[in-house]
Length: 196
Image (cartoon, rainbow, N blue to C red; front, top):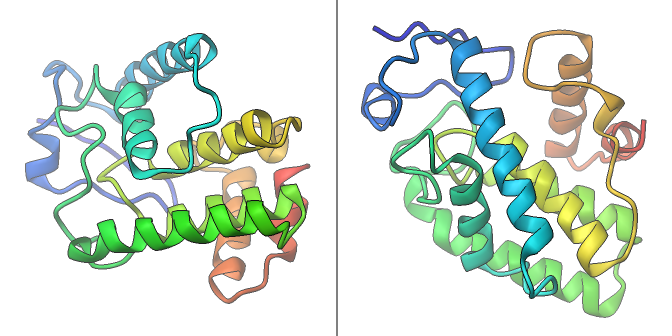
């Protein structure tokens, strides 16, 4: 029996999603976090080795990155969620919403609509708001923003508050507060947070 306790602002998994756990001996959130972090480290190594570093603002890369981050832990890694959650849009609308977001981001890049940082943090926020996957959305969206900064803009990654956002605590609370303000189109807190 799994007893995953979720930090504030995290999206609980439903029983069908938990059935997709590849490593059946995982029963607690700390165990899950450790296995996921090991998988994410492998994804970071893969990112360093890949050849085409400019093709990232497309649905295939978005899903491939999630798969690389979580494929050793979850059977459904890289696949859009198929249930509604406490945040995010209705699951049936995910493919269209993602396509619209990616079109917007490509437009912002091409037309220099915002600063490079603002394009990246808006991209991050809107990926989280859509909530593409059953699990790992924040970590995936943060990495997508960082890849956009480094590979497209040649800029430094965000610091994301310079700490671990996975567990409960003041740092995570500030992050969630910044995301909620961005939900209301106020990006000031997120702008400060990503470089703090």
